[in-house]
Image (cartoon, rainbow, N blue to C red):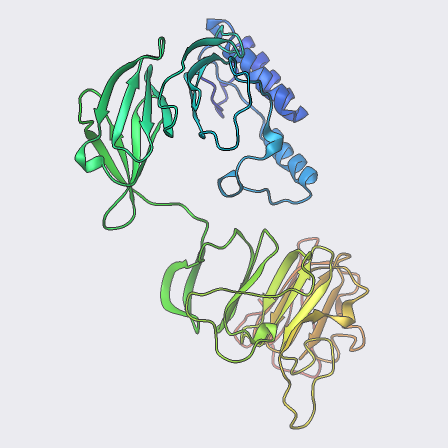
Length: 472
């Protein structure tokens, strides 16, 4: 049965299609995997006149499912099955293999499984079995056919394509064709000499395919045909592996390529937040790790910079903290982090009070410090942060704006860091330039202050005057 999502106005023209769409929508909204699979199964084994119907599922239900899952797992970032595997809670049903009086031991051969959408074909140390799945007029768990002697001590991969069952022994250039009804071997075929080498066979349900390592590096995707032996390659395409990457533009001390390119991640976990400066780049991952590349001054590490292309993990003050926001100043002298609990941390050099503390006076040179809590904000719940030259800025949960460091005295309360001119105007986002600041409020209004020499504040040039004003 063909079920696709159709966005056209004529999507649910038939009453039965509307009913099917409602059924799918209801079980998706319910969110129970067993109910979803039962509903899909009912559609798959329904009357033939249901075939080809187009089912429309409202987009809001897709968003709802994502939101509900985020609440259940306690994080908006879900683990990817490609990286983490299939969760144990994904199990819907299970039953024992028929005909086995004992449980396989831990040393038993790890088997293989394939399906033709009706029957399950299972291979292991017990041989080869054909078992009903409960779909397509089959009885769930019923042993339809079995062969007790079939490569019992040899690991391999079962494949089903275009009504044919195959077994490919691992480490050999062989493909064995099996009669899916009797489970008897029909033919043993060799792979073509060009298809021999490190590879993995798989099917898309129609064709036998192969992913193979290329001698010059990389991989290729091949389509095979079993009309003769050796099995020839009928089509081949280069395969480019997909990976979530950091795309950068421009030159920095740690990366001087210049043009738009991918920054090597060295197989790090999925990146969550990122901030870059001319000599440092920092990233946090969805697993709660923090890394930097380039100068380590921002986290209190002095000496040589990290080797080009190498990421160094930062030891966090609290191993359980989850980073929600990162900011590094443009010179790479200091950084600030905000956790999911609203706690702020500062690291690096405090030259002009950007850490919310008095800077060293006289000839005493400030030393970079490791990440530590921002004492001036210990009673505040912060949601986001920003850095500029010798300046840090923060937005509280209530929209209150705080700034520390090289800030005009008439703008902030030097004791608390509150931007007094913005009291009563809840902020949503803030960005710091070299000598100007842009603020976006929760109502969508933009405010700016600082130098407007080049029109960076979005208004006509105004000559300097006493004091600093915030303009809307």
